[in-house]
Image (tube, rainbow, N blue to C red; front, side):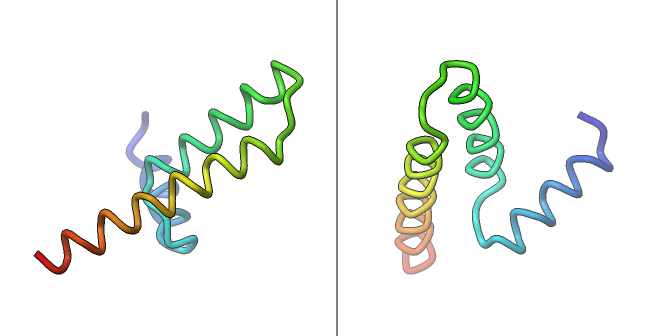
Length: 64
């Protein structure tokens, strides 16, 4: 991935207060949901749950 585009993704993830990996995962899941015909809401819920899990892990590591 070109550095410029990755920087834009990092900035967007920072604004949304989520890890870059969760943002990209969300985009991938949304695309898969569209391809499969599954609910985009279900994909969003999965990404939100994963982002919450990652935040909890990050908070524990900040304390340690």
